[in-house]
Length: 273
Image 1 (cartoon, rainbow, N blue to C red):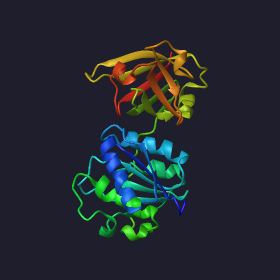
Image 2: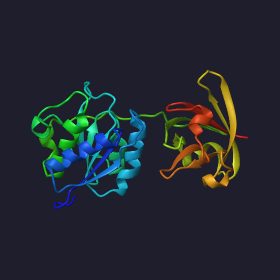
Image 3: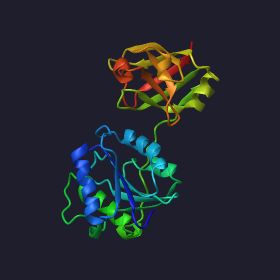
Image 4: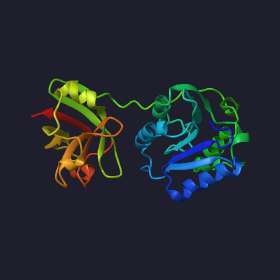
């Protein structure tokens, strides 16, 4: 981390105005910080979506202090935490699983501490805006050189544990992790899972999708496994490997979430025809 211009990133589900307030708090405490709002558009309350964004994005950012806030449990007994990583980054946010995948992508969790020391919070802490009152001040003080151990006791971390994909001969069963802003469904399976279940598929191979609709009725559809969206016609579905290496279900210039009625944690089975 640069001693002259410490780097701080912010990723929230707050929208622009509240995220800007958080950035302002960082600047007010550590004026020489270089603050980047990575995203203020995470789907509200979508912890898994936020975790996947941080995991994918933070390895491409400079070493620094990275704040992640998707916090439906704000004001409850969940802890605010700071995490030191193997790469040298410090992650700040709620202890609800949001930060752990990114920490693992940054060399693993070296240590974690609760953010409890009132010296590194704002003088008044609300019950509903810990982004402003707890997380942003903590990030600013960390960027300014305060040691993580000064913030509070060491702690274990809550982890996200999506069920692994079930690989069977000719069939792959997985769940939807989240729908991105385009309505594409990112699945809890990767290219290796697909290959283990269905073999080394050439692009263009048609596959069968099976799921249960919100009304409880079983449904099926077909979609090809393709390399790019442009290989299918507009409004047609496809399975593809996204930029993070995960399997996804999309509709070219449309929404797979709307087309198939699938959302977070929905089960999907992919079969050979």
